[in-house]
Image (cartoon, rainbow, N blue to C red):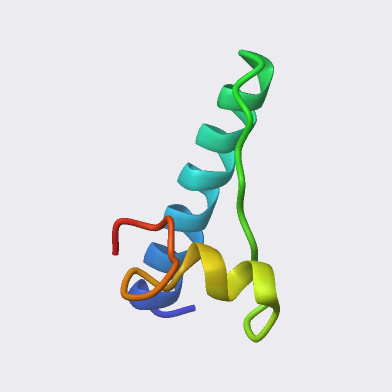
Length: 54
Protein backbone atom coordinates (compact mmCIF):
# COMPACT_ATOMS: atom_id res chain seq x y z
CA UNK A 1 0.00 0.00 0.00
CA UNK A 2 1.36 3.41 -0.93
CA UNK A 3 2.00 6.22 1.55
CA UNK A 4 -0.89 8.13 -0.01
CA UNK A 5 -3.29 5.23 0.56
CA UNK A 6 -2.09 4.91 4.16
CA UNK A 7 -2.62 8.64 4.67
CA UNK A 8 -6.18 8.40 3.33
CA UNK A 9 -6.95 5.44 5.60
CA UNK A 10 -5.50 7.24 8.62
CA UNK A 11 -7.47 10.38 7.83
CA UNK A 12 -10.71 8.40 7.47
CA UNK A 13 -9.99 6.58 10.75
CA UNK A 14 -9.32 9.92 12.49
CA UNK A 15 -12.65 11.39 11.38
CA UNK A 16 -14.56 8.19 12.11
CA UNK A 17 -13.13 8.24 15.65
CA UNK A 18 -13.99 11.94 16.05
CA UNK A 19 -17.58 11.36 14.94
CA UNK A 20 -17.88 8.37 17.26
CA UNK A 21 -16.57 10.46 20.18
CA UNK A 22 -19.06 13.24 19.39
CA UNK A 23 -21.93 10.75 19.23
CA UNK A 24 -20.91 9.45 22.67
CA UNK A 25 -21.35 13.02 23.96
CA UNK A 26 -24.89 13.15 22.51
CA UNK A 27 -23.80 15.59 19.81
CA UNK A 28 -25.77 15.05 16.62
CA UNK A 29 -23.62 14.67 13.52
CA UNK A 30 -25.12 15.16 10.07
CA UNK A 31 -23.09 13.49 7.36
CA UNK A 32 -23.49 11.84 3.99
CA UNK A 33 -21.21 9.49 2.11
CA UNK A 34 -23.57 8.99 -0.85
CA UNK A 35 -22.52 11.38 -3.63
CA UNK A 36 -25.46 12.34 -5.80
CA UNK A 37 -28.05 12.08 -3.03
CA UNK A 38 -30.05 15.18 -2.10
CA UNK A 39 -28.69 15.12 1.47
CA UNK A 40 -25.12 14.94 0.21
CA UNK A 41 -25.74 17.89 -2.11
CA UNK A 42 -27.28 19.98 0.70
CA UNK A 43 -24.40 19.28 3.07
CA UNK A 44 -21.58 19.72 0.57
CA UNK A 45 -22.80 22.65 -1.53
CA UNK A 46 -21.43 25.83 0.05
CA UNK A 47 -22.72 28.03 -2.78
CA UNK A 48 -26.49 27.48 -2.81
CA UNK A 49 -27.95 25.74 0.19
CA UNK A 50 -24.97 23.95 1.71
CA UNK A 51 -24.27 23.78 5.40
CA UNK A 52 -20.68 22.68 4.84
CA UNK A 53 -18.36 25.65 5.23
CA UNK A 54 -16.51 24.43 2.15
